[in-house]
Image (cartoon, rainbow over all chains, first blue to last red; front, side, top):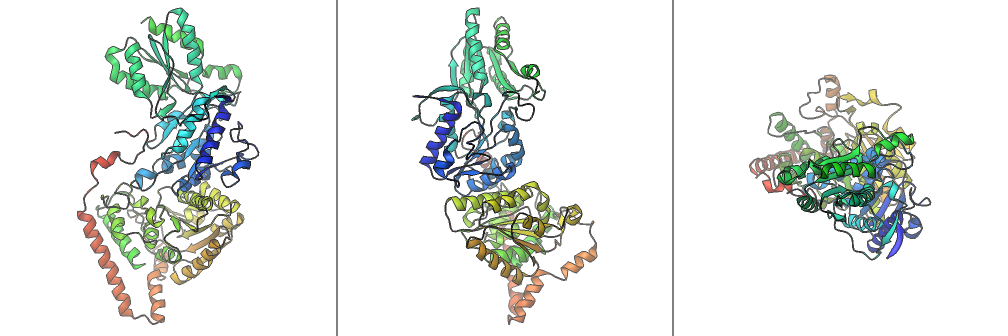
Length: 325
Length: 309
């Protein structure tokens, strides 16, 4: 076990996969001397050279289109899009090409590309650099969507994403880059689609992912003394999501609360609540709930930005209401 | 050329009489470009194409029967009937696919060239696209991209004067395709795209350079679309005189004249023509009675991880 940051964990995973497989390569802006926006590529260009760590122009369409072309011609590109907000500039190539090539070409090819799109609010980056767009990609057949919450997961899930033969939208939260944790550098790749229980409990199931997992765990600990035993499930992979683990937990607790930083309306919480309600309605002890951002662009001013965030106190408040029902 | 003409004459008719569905973009009148360029490619070389893609695939060696079955949506199609006219592809022949989004095949082509570079392979890539693509951002990004990495790619702009139903010139600032390529430092030249001999000569010369490491080059081939943008477009927006003028420059008739001038007998040409027509009649007959894709294929090939059953 080594203590490292979320960014260093990703760098370690990438380094290991590039050593292991010569067809893995990376393309994106400012990867070489800069080492990426969070240092997640630091020193890799010096190590692997400029044909495997490729600094590109600010051309998101072609970054993504070229990744598709290179993936269908026998390589495993890792695409760095800097911010999920810029992933929207490459949405056509992700949705119309990467996600569909295998199906519409009758299974002749696979598109083993990792599409890194860091999400979320950090340090007042405002409306165009703060979005959590995970639901957009979950909606698209053909894509796998991953959102790790710890350094250990960022290591094991990135390895899994690189080895996956499907296109994987890989969403790291910008506020997690500097978070430290223990990482087993020899860990095997994680299993995509497998959630993890971060805190066990009996009265309420809280489902979350990415940076909100930590807030949910904090709230769950605060709920204990108040007499509410909350279970926190970190989905880790959003498509496919671990329905079995969530259903099992809700069968035990009878209550479901989904927490995410993305906008609440048509967010992924809606899908989870709908699935649980459709299948487990008779055993529910309270209406399932969602805590997420209002349908407002992320504002710059700190007191306004704060209104987009779900706090531990809000989770505690919602949970207490639910257990009283 | 004759096979491409016969294939698309049938495809257009079959779309108009309802035997085919969806978008069918005929390549009639432009056959010399795919034929002249692909004559200079090996099986290992890659091509990417666009919505008007039947001709490129056939010229690169795709099986006309599997192509026709794809248009008919049958299980025996090149894409098992799941792609249709706009997604014909055959990876065993280096055909990376026609494409339903203008210019997207070009970004895929530069990525293919990047893979060739990474794997140190002995292949070149040809990106076919229309004049309309020259006004899309990804096209311009891809030109810049190919230049800065000096990728082994030949860009082939098939300039049939129309972007969908609009005259391209009326939507284009500046002098157009060649000047735009040159603005990115890519050497570009124009060829008479209705002259298969000229296209062949130009492609041979340019591809030789690309194979020996010149980096990207650009061929602008002038031509004309005899039909509308797609089979159901009657093209009433253009002057019939314009069409007549271009039909007088029929690439197939010009190729025939060239062959006759070099001693090929008109009877032999007639035989070739009949043979192409018969071949298409036979693949159509096969496609019309071929089985549909099984319903179990509906869920196949979406993805490995997270597939819906």
